[in-house]
Image (tube, rainbow, N blue to C red; front, side):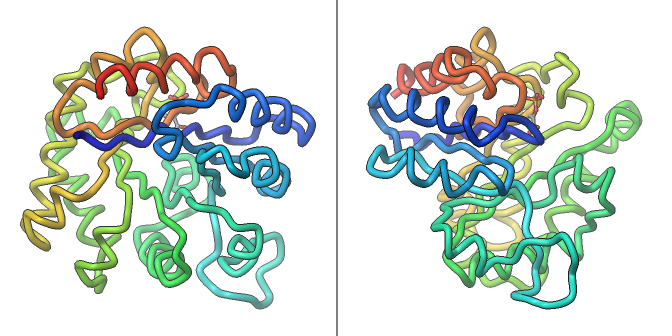
Amino acid sequence: MKKFLIAGNWKMNKTIAEAKEFADALAAKNFANAEEVAILAPFTQLVTLGESLKGSGIGFGAENVHFEPSGAYTGEISVPMLEEIGVNYCIVGHSERREYFAETDETCNLKLKALIAAGITPILCVGESLEVREGNGEQTFVASQLVADFKGMPADDVAKVVIAYEPIWAIGTGKTATPDQAEEMCAFIRGVMGGMYSNEVADSMLILYGGSMKASNAADLLAKPDINGGLIGGASLKIDDFSAIVNAANDLK
Ligand code: PEP
């Protein structure tokens, strides 16, 4: 049976009280396959999310992390700090962090290694800008991100990483990649991983689509063979919208 991960990325939204209300309501849904659902949230909300989601099967995690375990990095949060909270996931290399906070493939690579060593599942974001797509360079661009982001990582570790294909032109714009466009790139990513490692590793990896996924388009995207779920921004902020996407994945089981 196809495996999914339906992961909400709350970005810089919600107070602790709002996060608790949402997580309590989400846990109460008692989703089938709850272990295929996760919330990625601001650091301030993580302890509360852990408490509210405990025993529900639903995972939770952070949106970013520093690759050093400790030190003079004012304003940063380390992997051991996330471990202490018990997070399951951490986003790495979201395009907003690459664009606004100078995240590079080199830092993504260091973060992947640090997270894997701690047993936290990274959700690595890759994806091209509109300019790159209009120049038909999307496959070359995404392949180069994958090569750099996974540099020096052994197959066993790579197999534990979740990849999210997030075309920048579709994030928060309301413009979704068509199911065929999303499938084409997710299949391409799987092929690149197969070439870099093995088909066994590539086939075992979860490859998500992200970019204005919502209740109305989730089923068509999730039905595609190489799309194992979604990284969902805007539509993850409302419980009904997010639950509808989770249900769309469950209906495909
Ligand atoms: C995201 O931030 O990862 C994302 C996909 O956002 P949105 O769903 O709002 O486009």
